[in-house]
Length: 116
Image: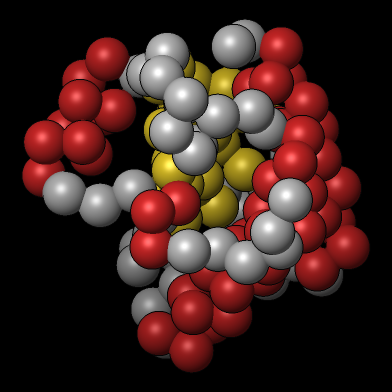
């Protein structure tokens, strides 16, 4: 599987995001809160990453955390099958190391793959 994160794998658009927010289920693990929706098609899974401005006022820290979350997903996306929309929300109020985010992403992806 390709180790990149292409445009088709990013969740965007008002209808898609609205459907996820309205009908999605929630799973929390460590530093990540995942809102997911099973689409049931063979298209690649799409993700969206959010770090709240309330917790991190500086855009530099928010962008750092979003990069770490996307990178940990990109390296492990083979764990998650096709046909799912996922929003990853970062919950702690401090910047955690990449290894901890990576470990929490592994747990989250294993749980989400069992929900398909």
